[in-house]
Image (cartoon, rainbow, N blue to C red):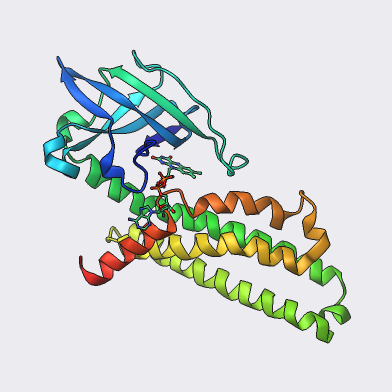
Length: 262
Ligand SMILES: Cc1cc2nc3c(=O)[nH]c(=O)nc-3n(C[C@H](O)[C@H](O)[C@H](O)COP(=O)(O)OP(=O)(O)OC[C@H]3O[C@@H](n4cnc5c(N)ncnc54)[C@H](O)[C@@H]3O)c2cc1C
């Protein structure tokens, strides 16, 4: 079963705790009311975890997580929204309103939804960091292959020294991003908290993934202007990596809070 995870709403992205979707008890079940947007696999997933406010007075401790199976009674609408990463992921808006009686974990662990959200984001950021390293690596490999095929004498001649610097800088940054990602993944595997490490890995890796295709394109010039070349085709996908699982600004906030103990 392909799963989706519904946190973001039209008016609540970075400030997820400001969500408007509510869940109210109804007999031995719940009634969810609201809509979510930009949910990866939202239109094709068999099941979606939906965050909803169960007790507004408790702030973020009043948010619970519900497991809603596709086709649950009352579930309506599937507005489609294309994102620039459409080639790699099915990211669609999915609306649900008055979704009745989900079989859910919230009944047992009500109010844990936001805390659970932060843990999900900590882990998810490692995944985005890994995707970013792969995309940056792909663009770099394509640029390197083009330069190598231009001949070793051309690669060594003075005009190409600047290109060599770009390749060297790229390789170094990609390696740094890879090691940040491995460190966060290693800590997760050990069951340690890695909020700061996963945010650092995600921030750095996604930022270089956005910049790398551009630099790689400049290394291959006209060849890269073809829509089919890897540097160009990865550019759109990588830009969404600096948004999903929290934007770069939010990663910086998370890291700073960890550093300052705030
Ligand atoms: C490809 C893709 C897949 C996604 N998949 C999912 C998913 O599966 N599930 C899900 O729930 N959501 C998903 N999202 C949504 C994503 O998590 C949100 O887009 C993201 O959190 C940003 O929210 P927003 O778009 O509402 O932007 P906003 O929160 O409105 O932010 C707008 C701008 O303001 C900046 N900003 C906001 N607050 C601050 C602050 N306090 N300090 C400094 N700057 C700030 C942001 O960095 C950004 O540049 C996905 C998004 C994309 C692009």
